[in-house]
Image (cartoon, rainbow, N blue to C red; front, side, top):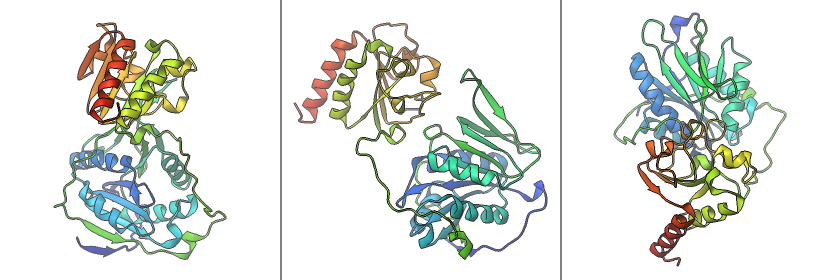
Length: 347
């Protein structure tokens, strides 16, 4: 892996911009899954354009993430590593990004639609004469000659999809939901260039400082969950979610829900999966009492394994499920829980 140093070469027109750049998000040196997911989709689009795929890593003691970005598909990785960048703060990170964008001249820039990604992308957009499409659920590109990013997202109260174009300005920028795209398989044989971005004193000039991070013990993170047990209207009430939690505990999983269950007040919104909730890509999702309306399925259809439990054999959920159980969930769930506990020695 070769090492280069950044040199200033300001862009003057759209034709000066080339390639796709993904801003890698991490916490404590561990990358968020959405970063590798975006590199996977970025690789597919870059190949379609015949352009390089780039990544930007900002932080402290994050050199390992530069190599990880190469492993997951990047050709070139820009890295700015300094103690002042140890914790995410809007001003320092946005200043680094703006300088790198000016030098690397990417035609497309992608961020995760996370709390950090949305904050950073929005701050950067205020300084650039270009647009930002937020919370995308689909990304593609038109090939030569337009090379336009097709950034699609739900619109009009989630009733339709809108594809937004930025024809006249560069870079084209978008944030995309976690769990929508699939990361490439690790390829430890890949090689790429690491370009070191010098740290300038003005990067650290900010009125804010991070005192501490407090992680909620009972916080819910469906986007990172490998196993999700989800319930819907068919559960009939909030008390049945206790069965789902029991199964989730037996499988080291997390409980999710459809919009109908959330709207009924049975569970908190942070457990909602779907267009107006979270998009997830777990290894396993068990959907109990969920009919399978599009609003829900678009948020979980890319799970590695989908098991549906519903008493209606015509329920739409069975059309996307890998395995389906037609039956009374109040009889089926206890049997699954008992078997799961038995196999894990918890019975």
